[in-house]
Length: 66
Image 1: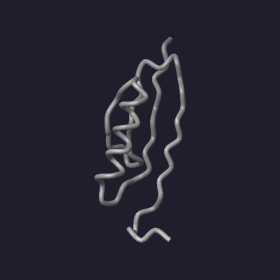
Image 2: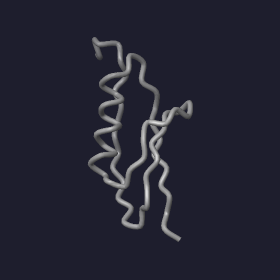
Image 3: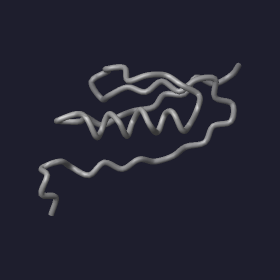
């Protein structure tokens, strides 16, 4: 049982070598940042989940090189 009242969030890693940029947004559309560095993307997402009182699901959108 989670005594903190927060749901457990799962972070799934995806590697996309052609990525120009990963745009990170919450379910409601709030922008958390954009990066092509997987480490920085993970830090942005982890910081969001650790600091938000009621975190939403996070989506990462990749812009692919044409």
